Length: 455
Image 1: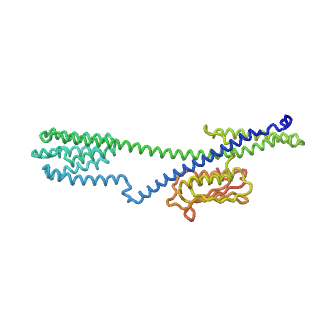
Image 2: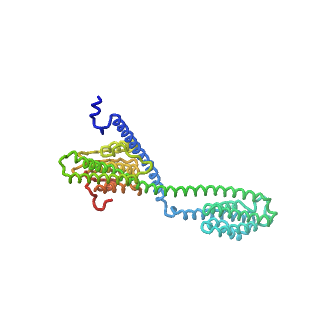
């Protein structure tokens, strides 16, 4: 037994090593499958968000043009409120408070128009409201009934509320506070100038009601401001995420190319290094030539590992399982089906295909399925993979969807770069039936150098 073990080659792995390697490969495949499922689930969630956003945009598009403009809608609403308050305030003060009709109509106009003016000229609105409030309160005859609220009537109270709330929403809490303080000071001044007209209840009620509504408006304004800031941050985050995804895709392409090229370079280095032992009759010049080839291959491998070390992130670990290829496309389709998508698969793959082409075919299929799930949720998807003597063709098509796909993302760009790097091409766009088709043509065995103009 000892002699038999000694006769075995030293480089041959043991059974324990084989089991450990198979276990690591199974774990790697399970992790990759989980990543595929997570990616498909995230694409479905994003698709639902984009679908709701498109429905909201369609509802807004059906509205008239003036209703889609926020400033125009605000002006129309405030004008309607001003007309309503004016129509109520003038009769109440003329009939119940005995104010002269002409002066009441003249002073009520700036009082109710102050909120509308404050959208563009808040300081002018404060002056108009304060002055008209003071003069309108002082115009009440001295024989007015003490049972009526004064110096703030009910219509003036409502106008005061609107005059405080609008500047708070439009210009911030400071402007609203100035309007509130100015209006309160105008009512207090009128009460001090004509002390026999009021017991102070109207001032207390008005100050309390308007002050409470002002605080509520400040809280709502702060919440809206925070919401707008969050929306802007989400937009910036989405842009940064798109850029990061593009960089990660290019980095992954570089890693996959390293895995493919490093394998070939390793074979070249081994063959060149062992040539003198496999071919004993080599001339010294040939041996030196093979040694130079082996040294060049080793140097190239070192440079590739150095570049890959720069590309790797801190949390990235080396892949232990083989890279995905065309044989893994059925598993990818099955993962997408489990996520709830209706996917059909037709494969006619035969013959030898280069490793780089297999990786590109798998990744293009993966990205195409993710885009279909994201931009056309609920539609049927078909995947067709075929080969001929020179090329591999991948076609992914989804059925027509009600709304056009939302622009954005770098999936198509990444697929195009992958194909161009191998000398292939990718065509994506709407088809004659109204659906969306991605068609990739990749060479079975890419040439030594990419075509002109490729990345």
